[in-house]
Every structure is written in structure tokens, then in C-alpha cells.
Image 1 (cartoon, rainbow, N blue to C red):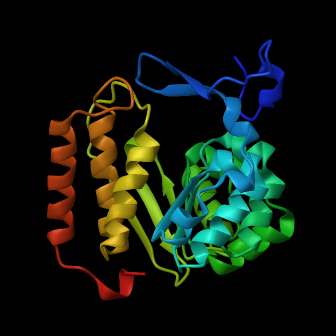
Image 2 (tube, rainbow, N blue to C red; image 1 turned 120 degrees about the vertical axis):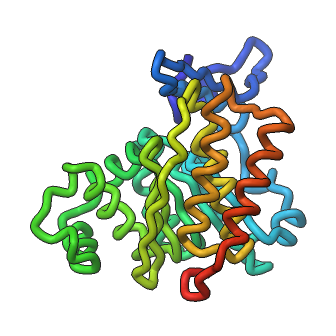
Length: 273
């Protein structure tokens, strides 16, 4: 099984045919998962393969961090989406993506095409490890609560340092914290934390993506930072209670109902983007 980011050309068959992407999820007795990913034919995607018209008409483009292995494809997709003024969000996907694609990530951020970015605790920690001294200093200058502290411990400070760095380039940065919920910060200096629902996690496979979908849904509906975080946590709480990354109709209905209740609460105009 190839690790994340391995060149798919190594797996060509006898006829030169590359298989589809695959991912093996290893789940421990606490419900925590580790993924081993083989990118397969997706690693051969070219900018010319993109559905240009669909991207030009999109309101939102959400990209997984694995796209950073093909930065030219990601850049083209973002450029096409931006022609229509689409919102572009990026999920860092894996600490290994951050580690292996650091230059591509920096170039993507510096291009200014990303509006919203998501990471988890591991990705935040890996991101901070790669920030140069000047970058860390500027992050701490923007957020005094970091001054004089070790950004590696405790983990909350690592997360804040990572978000401060990301906010040099994006409008909104979010770090999911698993059973601790999430923290979101925007470029205007607002910060909000949301708690997880405290359910028993059977399998965390798909939790990050489901969290992101709930957060973005609330964000596009005009929710405050707190409402967006609460919506993401509400969605993530449902998927961790099933094995695998698929939920049945009843659980999706429950997600929609919970988010509708969250968005029905009073909104803060200053917290909307």
C-alpha cells in the first residue's frame, strides 16, 4: 500500500493502466482512524482535465489538501472558480500533506485565491513546525496571547499559532479539535470556540469532511462564527457514531434538523463574512 503522495506511476499495470485511487482506514479500539492513501489515476490529473464550465459557474470550490500534490491543477481550478467570484475553501487533509507539500501550500496561500481554510490538530502542529522564525514572530505579534509561550505545548497554543499564520492569507481559518470541538478565527480578529457534542466515537473516518460540510453550510447561510462551528460539530457528531464514512437518511435528517436549530438562533452581523 502506497503512502499518501506516492507517485502513482509506480503502480502501472502490465498494460500501462493505473488503478483508481484507494484509501485504507485503520480504526483502533477508541474509534481513532489512520489512513493509508494510494492516489492512483488521480495523481495523473492535468489542468486540461478539469470541467472548466462547471468551475466557472460554481458558487463554491472546496479542495482537499491532496490537490497540493498537483499544484498546477489546483491553481487552474481556483482561477476558473474565481472568474465567477466563487468562494474557495481548502482542507489541509493530512499532516503528511502539510509536510510533503509545504512549498505548494505556501505558494497557493500567497496567490490569494483561498478564502477559507480548515485544518485539524495534527495538521496545525505540522504547519507550525514549518513556519520560519519570522513567520512565528509575526503570528505572535498579531495575537498577543501567544507571546512568550511555547507554540508546541499545550496544543491550544499550537493551534492558535497555526491559525494566526494562515490568517495572513485567508479570510477565515478553522481548526477542528476532535472531541474538544473546534476553534475558528477570522481576519478581523474575531475568535470563536465550539464544543463537540460528547458522543461516543465508534469510528472517526469521515469526521473531518463531515465537520467541514456542516461548517460551510452554515457559513454560506450567513451564520456567525459560533453558529458555523456548532454546525460543523453537530454534523461530525453524527458520522463518528457509525462505522465507515457513510450515514443513512435518518442521520442526515438529524444533521439537517440540528443545523436548522443552530441557524435559527440570533445571528451576529459582525460575525458573518
